[in-house]
Amino acid sequence: MLVMMKAHATREQIDAVCDKIASLGLHAHPIPGETRTAIGVTGNQGPVKAELFESLPGVGECVPVSKPYKLVGREAKPETTVIDLGDGVRIGGDELAVIAGPCAVESPEQARAVAAAVSASGARLFRGGAYKPRTSPYSFQGLAVDGLRILAAIRAEYGLKIVTEAIDVESVDLVEEYGDVIQVGARNMQNFSLLKRVGRSSRPVLLKRGNAATLEELLMAAEYILAEGNYRVILCERGIRTFADHTRNTLDLSVVPAVQQLSHLPIIVDPSHGTGRRDKVIPLSRAAVAAGADGLIVEVHNNPEEALSDGNQSVHPHEFEQLMRELRQIAPVLGRSLP
Ligand code: PEP
Ligand code: MN
Image (cartoon, rainbow, N blue to C red; front, top):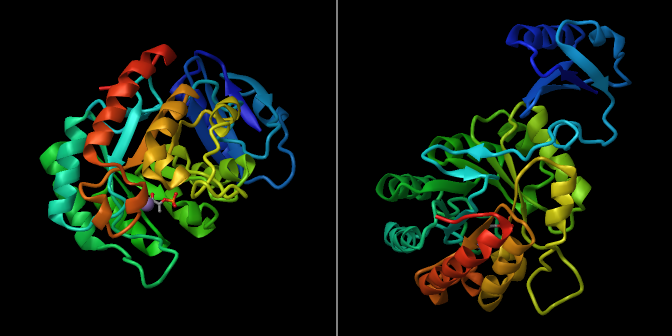
């Protein structure tokens, strides 16, 4: 259930409703909107009695939630969530968020070369895995904390915000210490203990769609994070597995407007994992922005032929520059801008 406060409800009235919810052994999630605050009620097994709240000062109405996800749905918050990372970097606002960088951090030299290039092209967020979920146990697994230290140095030198993956509950402590956004990868989309742990983090979470997950499963995974109190979640389409074999995955761009209809959370697109092929990254990036995505996460490598992971889908710095040039022309058609 959602307790919809009146437009001019005071802080004290909102707190009083939250206290009432807590006194029933339930959890209160105040979600401020543009015109009014909605308070999500979770933790109930059966229906919650609306009469318990309707007479409290400042309460407008109580509305049952029709969807299984209570907090990520647009019913809870009609306007799209904008995630503010500080220094003017936002995800979900008018400006497209472009996250660029290598699949994995390999060395200080490699990370710096890519960071210099992508920041010169206008990216404001840097990606790079220090912990890599690899299909083979014999593949490069990432530099772990040494990689995180390299990422922190990149932030200090280039002012880029750092997006990096936590592959398990154990790695979250360090990822939240060194990174700005915690990535939860496709393979972990339904790792519920990891979702609960990042739900208790103060860092925003980039949640990638599992490669066989439905839209509802993606939204329910996000709900795990919000239910723990972290409302700063960015969804990411990164391709799903189909019978098509001309690309590594099938990039499901139709999920972008579908998410936007159902959820207030921002959604970005990963054309790199979505296609697995360097020559497909630019066309699918254009299409993602045209479909209304709030941003992109793109793998860029200074020497993709020698990359320790995902070289085939990593674009060269000059291709990334071209992509940004093209996006600057496409973005205004959608009422968007690019730095
Ligand atoms: C990645 O971003 O490098 C990655 C492993 O992505 P995904 O979880 O989408 O496969
Ligand atoms: Mn990768």
